Length: 372
Ligand SMILES: Cc1cc2nc3c(=O)[nH]c(=O)nc-3n(C[C@H](O)[C@H](O)[C@H](O)COP(=O)(O)OP(=O)(O)OC[C@H]3O[C@@H](n4cnc5c(N)ncnc54)[C@H](O)[C@@H]3O)c2cc1C
Image (cartoon, rainbow, N blue to C red; front, side, top):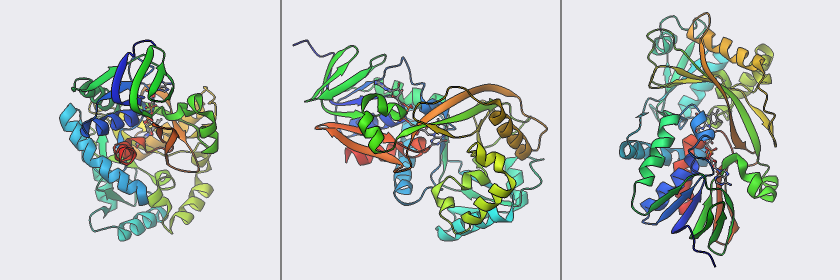
């Protein structure tokens, strides 16, 4: 029998935010941890997103997980030394229907959690000259922001420096049984293996992916120059966001909003838009997004989709156009059946993935649930 390349209480597969959150949770329980990733650094969904921890607009168990995760984000931001801001999120209403959704949500929550804003306060928070059609808004108090590119790398670096942690990059996982994992670099011994491979679940466990209806969701994203002097602390959400995040979508007023968007902005519905943006610490804006679903994703990005998003963002900002600095496609695991998956696939081997667009929001809460 060959010598294992690593031995620990827990093996975490995948160094995206879900894997890193599970490694943090295991370490906090005094367990030794090996983390492996097939790449030389994380380049998956966790560095391609808005860095928006969309806490307030969750409901039910997702809200509970998000509130747990919120505390952990602040804790690890301080421990690992990366940017985070308890900025909240600004949800903009550009019609009375959108305002009705925000009002209903506000009335259902404790005072201050969803604070309604006047049109002028909403526009001032955004920028002077912002879209004149804004009729009001709401501040979603409990939302956070991090810079995804910095945060994920910083947590990985911090974890690698902790006693009891072994971090192995460029190490692919093939499978595990009886406390032994097979990888591209040799065997790893661990009492428990937690598999956090996100949208690539089907490469390892195709039957599980099929039975839980897990497929890929691709989003078109861009980084653009902000209008001169613009400083934007909160994440910004719009009407299409209200159709996606559960706390908005579950309001009685959301049905009328869906009809309104269908009647007036079929182009946004067609590309599965969630028009939103965040500002990175360097001042540029991360803007998006669109949604396409497939088991194997078509790699070609329609320029029309980007144009629709950029036009809409420019309109909200109240500028003629925005200058694009980068474009990319992000892919996350998605399922209409459940927003996340924790499943024992063999004795001591657990799959833990987020199967909706809220991995940054709930990962640290999910890890607490997986580890018990
Ligand atoms: C464009 C975009 C915007 C988003 N915006 C937000 C947002 O603002 N807020 C929010 O809450 N969520 C957002 N999400 C969702 C969120 O980013 C994801 O849910 C989350 O990042 C998933 O994390 P993960 O660790 O599972 O996946 P990933 O970050 O993709 O990590 C999976 C890792 O597993 C590794 N891996 C895969 N197979 C193997 C193997 N066999 N062996 C070893 N390693 C392997 C990969 O190399 C990768 O590093 C967004 C997603 C996208 C794509």
